[in-house]
Each structure stands twice: as structure tokens, then as C-alpha cells.
Length: 374
Image (cartoon, one colour):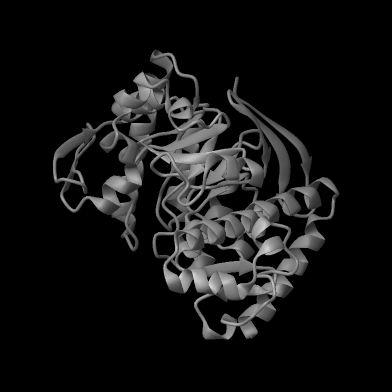
């Protein structure tokens, strides 16, 4: 039930537009995926997400395992039914959360022992159990358990970490094949900021012949140009006919840059997290709605935006809601930011299909340069 179909490739860059067929619908790529860590995209209802055109969202194995528990979700009919979302879901394995949230953890060949950030209780994840938990959740796309290498890391530290993740990928595949699963499995390329390790990781994972491939271990504190360099160094070693997913990126102006490098799927908490903090993305640059200059501004947040927020509310009202600590502030801000990201991806896709992506990319780069100068 999982298939990736490439419709058009850009003749100048590595951008491509495609269709990702999943058990819960077809996803147009390139795609940005809103993050719904614990079975909800913060401050959004499922109806609002559908109205914005989201076809796939993320859930997280670590958080859902700890609360409310994967067995409860299985008994409720799976995550789709539990959260009343009939479109696609990708679940992260929880590896990043284990290594970032748990101060007390022990990594061994068999897996990782960690303590819950909720109550300090001890738990164990293995490559096999991560697949089993995601099977219980019923996600359309599962991620293997991997070790997210810290930045910076020495070449030797990164090599050992990458090779451990590669061995875990083999075990995850074996478990995935041995048990009925509604979804598919993506392994994760690691190797920190070392192109030779990224190549070795990609080649080992491609040998597993899985339906898609993720590039992980990025956006962990490294300079953004280095992130692009690592994606560019990794992409040639991944199969052209399979979807590529770069995890945890990026800023709006970075989205077309990743697409130009051959990336099909992206996710990031930036649009939702920034919305709750009052930072809004617009066609004219970022707006910090907390600023006093907007206190009596009757204009829409973004005059070029077609989202429900920009069509109805003023900057002054949005600032008032934020200053008053109203729940509606997070709702409206998140609605706008997610629309901005999803609409940008739609424009990127249309540019590829119209064979005009290179022009789109050039305009985006000029706008980014002008913004940085200002």
C-alpha cells in the first residue's frame, strides 16, 4: 500500500514533485509535515489541520509510549482513530527524545535504558520494541530507533554512533518484516558532520532495500550552511526512486533549498513553537507580534496571505490576544504559521510541475538576502 511516484524533476536542481501513496491517502510531495508530538498539533484541531490542507502529521513514540501508553492506543483502535485523524501519520521512533530529554540513560548494543522525563521511572527501548510500539500506534510511516549523535562529535565518536544505528536499522527491518504492520519503515542516515560517515551510513541502509530513507542528526546546533552541505553530501548515495526525508528542518526560506537538494519530506516544530511565542512568518519577513508598534495597527498580519487569520483579524487584535495571554492567541498564530509553511510548499511544488522552480529558487534567495541586509 506504500508507493512513491515521481511526476516531475527540475532540469537544473535536484528538486522533484511526486505522490506518496500511503494506507491513509496520497500525499503530494515535496511536503512539510506539522509536528503533533503527543497525538495533537498544539493549538490546532484536526478540522483546522484538514482545512489548511495537511495530508500527514507526526506523532512521537517516546511521548505516546509514556502517556497514555501504546497499548491503550492500540485498544482504542490505533492512533488514527484515537485522535480522530483519517489522514497519514508518521511516527518518530523516540530516539531523539531519549537522548535529549533523559539525563540518565545507558546505551548498549541491545538498546537504550532511560528514565522518563515525567516521573523518573526506568524504561528500555530496543530497535525491535520501537517497531512494536509503532505497530501498536498504527502509523503509516515508522522510523527506526537510532542514536542521535551529539554535536560536536569527534570522527571516532560519530563513527561508532553511526555504526550502532546501522546495526539497529537491520534489527528494525527484521522485526518489521516479522510482524504484520499497516505502515512502512524508514531507516535513518547518521554520521554527524562527516561526509565519509554519511556515505557509509547511506550505503549500508540502502542495502536494506527499504521503501524510504531519512537523514537525521541535523539541526542539533551546527551552523546552517553545514546542514546543507551534509544533506548535499548524503543525497547522491540514496536511491532516486525512494522518498528522502530530512528530519527537523527548517526556516521558511530554507524549505526550497532543501527541495533543491532532492529532499521530498520535512518536518519542524518552528511554525508551531514560534507561533506560541508570538513570532509569525509573513511574505514580508518575520513579525514579532509582541512589539508595541502593532498595538494600534489595523492592517492584516500579512496582506498577501489567504489564511483565515489574515482575512479576518488585525495585527492590533493579535497583539492584544498575546499580551492578554488568551488561548485564542496560540490558536490564531499557529493557524497562520502552519498555513504559511504549507502554502509555501504548495508553491514550491507548483513551480516544479510548471518547470519554473529555478526561477522560484532565485527569487527566494534574493528575498532572503534583502531580509538579512535589513
